[in-house]
Structure formats: structure tokens, C-alpha cells
Image: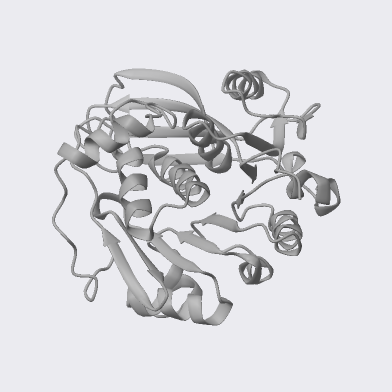
Amino acid sequence: MSEPQFDVVGVGLNATDTMILIPHFPAYGGKVPFLNEVMSPGGQVASAMVCCARLGLRTKYIGTIGDDLRGEIQWESLQGCGINLDHVQRRKGCPNQSAYILIDQTTGERTVFWSRPDCLRIDPEEITPEQIACARLLHIDGHDTTAVAHAARIARQHGIPVTVDVDTIYKGFEDVLPNVDYLITSSEFPERWTGEADPLKALTLLQDTYGMKVAAMTLGAHGAIARMDGRFAYSPAFVVNCLDTTGAGDVFHGAFCYAVVKGFSLADTLEFSNAMAALNCTAMGARGRMASEAEARALIARGERREKTDFASYRR
């Protein structure tokens, strides 16, 4: 069998963000002057693929981009990262997905307002087996559900593991989950999907129901937790000078993909992904600081961790 052309293929969203830095959030109905405004590329899967490419993986991105200024910014950014874009569609007369992101200077936390026009939707028939079977790993999100479900089925048919980034409930997502090997959700998703408030029980229920190898959950400033082979692994977050949390989850997923391709242990995967996400928070923008593996290892070696969380009582 020939060597796959790519280490990872990503199918899913990109976005171009307008970052607005404010000194603090005003009271409801109030107003404050903003300190800075920057337009920068982002988006769940696209940013994860940029992270993979930064770490040295042979990377391909499949998605759609609008033909406006925001689309051009996204296109030029992806081109500059060495990512294969052969199956990125540039949709004529369609604005790119965009977001306005308010960043609280005091904490680095962000509030997002986003829009994605329907003309950017990816349909299943636009994804062929050849586009997926050329990779060692497939990474998807949940937005164009029928398309990513189709991509995940192709991957399963070719013995290619699938990682998924999901943060909310998507109609038809039950068609995606049976073909997922690595489920990495937001802290809210497991309870919303299963109805089980305890995060450990919710992850266990998801894994037992759909049979994925790893069921994991990112916890923001609390780190990440994952279940594999009937056991939980927890990795606390790193303490850094946080300027902007935008894109931290996307970088976590990109680093997780890298770790899977490289064969890291689960504990090392979580710690490495947390370190990469933390370093990205030290600069402004969804791709503010895409660190190298050496930089992440340096943070792991010397970095301060946050206190461990009591997950039996964890709520967000």
C-alpha cells in the first residue's frame, strides 16, 4: 500500500474575524471606547489545519471561501501556510463567513457574533472518496452536517481515523458520531446531547453509545479531560499571560490531530494540546501565536499549571 499523500485532511469551517479590543465589558446598555481593531483569519477547521501545517504535517483543507475582502484575507492566509487548497471552492457573489469578536483586555475572554451565509454550504456530493482517502487522518466539525457525515463515512471505509470538533447540537449529527474515532467537544455539548449533567457520566455515555476510541471535552481555563479504555485522563490548563482566548480551542484540535498522527499517549496528547492552546492565547487573533513543538515542550517543562478541577461538581 502506498504512503498517503497527506497526514491530515480537514473538512469544515473558516472565518475572517474582526477583533475589537475593549478595556472591559460595559454594563448592559452602556458603552466603552475600544482600544484596537484588527481583521484576521480564523475558523474551526481552517485554523486547526494551520496549526497542523505549522507543526510540520502535510496538510490539506477542504471548504468554501467567499469572494469578498474577508474571503481574500482567508485565502491568502491559507496559501501562505503551505496547505493544499486544491478542493477549496471560492464561491462567486458570496460573502465569506465573518465574526465580530469583542475581547476583554482584563481577562482575554471573548464574545463572538458570527454570520455564515447559506451560499457557503458544502454539499455531500462535492466531497469524493479521493479527497479523503489520500490522508492518514480526517478532521471535521459539525456545521455542514450531511457533508461531514459523508466525509466521515468515506474515512471509515478506508480505515482512516476521524477527529471531530463539536461545540453545539447540529441537526443530523447522530449520523456523524458512529464514524468518529476521537470526539473532542466543548464543555456544554455532552450534557446537551445526553441529558446527563455529570460530565464524566456524559462522556462515558457518549463513548459507550457510539464506540469512539476517545471521548474528550475541552474545559477552557480548566484544561481538558478524556476517556479511553474505560479510564479518564485529565490535564490541567497552563497559566500564561492571556491576551485573547479566540482560537484556543481550534489550536487545541490541531495539536490533538498532530499528536494522533505522531502516536502520542493520551496523557501526552492532552498536555501538548493544552500547551499549544495556551501559547496561542498570548497574542491577539485566532491564529495569534501558532507555536512550534519545541515551544510547547518548553512550556510543558517549565510552565505553571492551574489547580485540578473537581469534575464531580463541575458545571459551566
